[in-house]
Image (cartoon, rainbow, N blue to C red; front, side, top):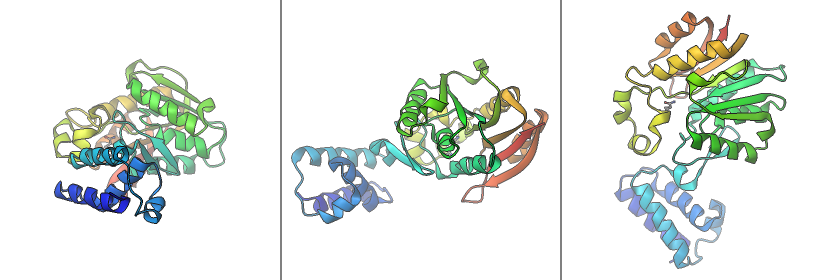
Length: 280
Ligand code: GLN
């Protein structure tokens, strides 16, 4: 069977399993199976596939047909200007989270040698993107998941920022290291009872540890705010990602912990998604 025929077959299997972007996904998975980019697939569509590659491809199609996200099959995801390694233990970077990077760069314009802390670093996508943009900033990342610490380390090597980064495998309550000019966080903020309403690909495959915000959805946000108020310098900036309906509650928490609210940013779907505040 040639590349074109196999892609078609993969597409039909995905379609039958109600995967929406069946053609695109089948092409991406073929790229992975033959380890070539999509341009190669088009130019070499009549090439025959050996049995090993074909089996690998069908295996990927099978996993995708069960809903496993593409990023966990290709083991990578683009975020900001870079490609990040992801594995099933880390949350897949979301385009909405790029707001934090964008604003971090804006609020630190003309500043140098700042110390930045990422609470719940995950794949490293936020902090490492900032370190790439700001060549003399220094980063610290913590995560309760050992696997996340390891993956963000891998990504830091790949992006060549490892010499400006320190990583800790720690829960937030026990973390006491350093004082920071900028703190960023995308903590778990989905209400425990609402997890089941998330897209099946998300709820069945992405780590609950990165999504579950407890009974009220803001249990982890509360901890992050409290810890941030201890570790941030006076006049330091804090960028926090929140759930679409959490703005008012989170604003109140911030104010009670000594922060001034600068601005709330919306995501592409016009949901409140990120709060910028300053420690006073
Ligand atoms: N934005 C993610 C989602 O909707 C949730 C990320 C989080 O809880 N921090 O799946």
